[in-house]
Length: 573
Image (tube, rainbow, N blue to C red; front, side):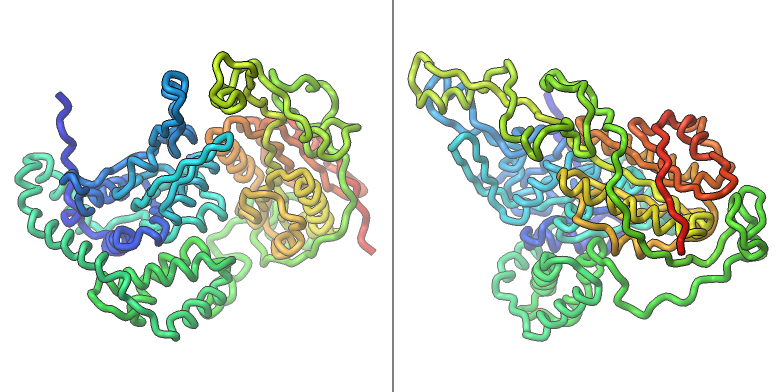
């Protein structure tokens, strides 16, 4: 006999006022698009998500609302549903087998560690969460069903971020603080201890609060459609989104829906300034690209009494040379210089049983040299595995079958180019940083033509900065690269460690992904990376330009087991 799971009451959770309200607004109006909770382990993310389901209205049969968890290893068919092939074979009738989206209808769909979920699944479930309808199409047959649920995603930012395009698809985002006040820690442990000792009594103690909250939610749902917005609300939202540098209009629509739900929660039929201001940080937290408030004050001086130059070398304030490790220094701008495309070493693509031409050299996009552009996409190879559903469609229900269809093979691997760009002080001389930026932009243009992905990390001033987060390569990265200033020390170990972490994270989420790493540096560092994990398919691109060369980039390539590539440089006029 399976014992029912007793969930911790929503109203008994200590603190978390903002998160509670954001979750409730999403229940009142699921078209907000879900709530993403970013925070460290043990911050009650899962507890609140599970407790929320108990507050939802019961189904017509008197059952409690469903709480469905989407596992990380779920397939697309398990998420969206599939056609029952067995019934098609036995009864020659197309029958839909519901997936997790259908099971979550009217309840909560919970995705823990959503940043580790495959991007295709995240994109798909966010589409359904926004529209409220799941459409499954296959071989000319389409099936749709209602799928309205409260979407809750949780993630630990230490394990990697979501791509910006997917972040934007979540309606609201809340970042949980890393630390908790002593008083709250004590109250949380006391509450949990009382619940563990006698769950039934604990739940009974909060029954009245739970019932009152459930009634308030139902009342807000009933009055939601009657809530109106004065004209100033639309203008205010548009202005604030523009000031925050928000891309697209999803933030505007979400902000209006969230403010409308907040007004309904208050029992009002008109959106007020309080409604707009309350939800603003949750709408813009993951969409803001620039600060709309007063610019920050000037940065602190280049060094403080407690700072020590890295690597035991003199600080930049003491020496103007470009040798060795530099201490902290104010960032210096250096714009990109145009460069020609590079003929880089071929990608070390993994062998595939479905690709018969793996030994020929490959260009940047993974195509065989000598092929016409796009020629490899015109004809898909077939495997020896039958595609039973496609076979049924091709034979139009006739038996015995006269045609047999086979599954299509993958024609290549998805490719991601991860660039580690040295922006330390030693790259400022002879405009080496500007030239390196030109090579990165050249690589970006080639990746764009091949429809591949890019990510760029800058390392300088003793810090690693994400200049361009992982996404489809754009036509150019000139503006982004020009905004990256140079100066300070060379945190080589930090960037190699971060690159290794990202590579493991991305390949865990997408096992078929091929990642080529480019370490672009002049090698002016004494740090060793011999003890760090290798970066797989890696190219060390040497930008050193000096009459007396140290040749440290060669050493780094050997330690990383990488290709060595000397970039052509020219002295600035």
